[in-house]
Length: 230
Image (cartoon, rainbow, N blue to C red; front, top):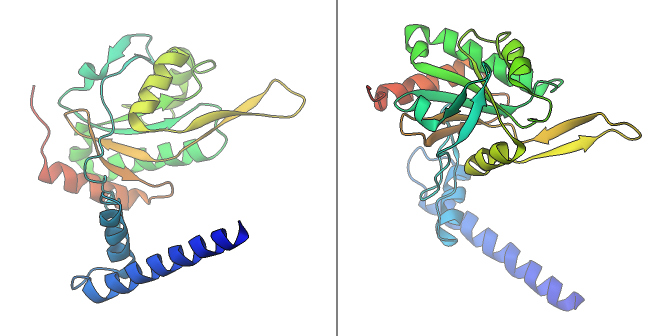
């Protein structure tokens, strides 16, 4: 058994080494080695891998689609669906109001980016979708999102509704309970999603993306693909 594991490990190392060498020899002018390597690995396994562009977020892999129809409740208590946002760009973040650090930082980044975009930023709707629907009522969300941006929309729903929209965006989240207490936090993925007028994700932005970089990337997307008019 140990001999088999060693043989498989050796083959894997040789395979990755060969792909790395191929990427080094065949990369295009100006193409980074890491980017070339990721592309060759993606083609080897039948798909393009998402790689970061300079300040432009992460391009979705070919054939991968995120986003889609949903039914939730906004921070005013009104039932909404994806159709209420049709024809508009959105910056969507999945978080929760009890989040101690990451969520406030990323929501602040979104708000700063929209302000930095000037009038163009007014065409983008900032959205927080909670991953803690049991505690994040519309009233809680209304108070919370108003601290970041006057146009920010908070969305909640039943646990089942939230789970359904999280699957559409491939968002991970899970409760993390403190020992010997009923209190808990929610571990969750931290991407910000740029959603196009068709309700589909156009770019992902990693946590700690600078507001200036986010603003530039979103502005470029709006310039290349103007929002549909109603």
